[in-house]
Length: 328
Image (cartoon, rainbow, N blue to C red; front, side, top):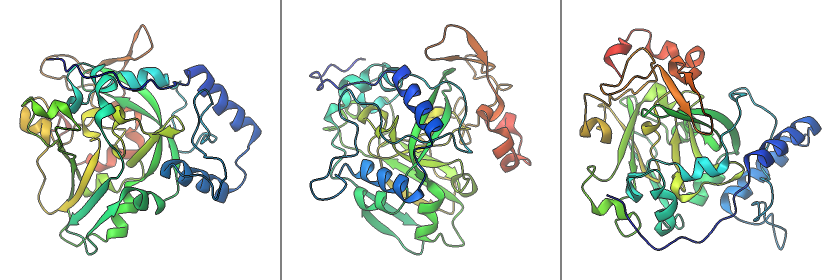
């Protein structure tokens, strides 16, 4: 099945080489010498508003290099970033079609504004919050993470967002909270792939609470110095870099803290192949293919897959009492 919808408006794409040169220039010049300036730039970019009055927008305009870039941080990989073009045209987002190119072709129907997110369940301060208000609560961070798909391909992406832990602490989880459940928008008019029963819509995902509170876990609202494209999960997606990519739920409208382990879409669809934890483990093969190596998009040769996608030092302790072979 391939959805064919009217062509979206063309968008300017910054080349990988230009993006990487921009990052290196700013790193060497140390342009961001003040925390306040960096935070202000991030918040303005994400809200898509000018700096004030008639001042210029901090969003990159067509043909410009990304404007929100900073030196390498403590969570960043130093691996070469995947090109912006590849990262925005090779996607799994079944709400817009089954082929890798379908989301970029069809996601123009998604309207990421206005947008609200419900945060509820086992919290002391449940609320429904407008997306722009939610973004204003946190300073922007750019983190360059590896992303590994269970299909055995991978990318390196500079995400823009904030730690999920900050949002969860703001709503004050109760003592009963053990898990965090996420829900994607369900609207076939905006997401035409939902007209077909390829999955049980809406898409849902979940984390254990300690996974959600881990410093690596973030909510992304942008990438490559730009607002998150529709096909990559605008306006809000989850990024958990040590897990297989299907855990990165997109276009989130609800975040619920629960006492019991929540259902997840791919586990519902095929529990034998897609477990709740979905931690990257090269020693545990998918029932239909090996996970010992991966194909980095933009490269010709395969590379060995790293345990926990290269983040074992940071996250392995979360699972030290578990049988990881039994929690694929």
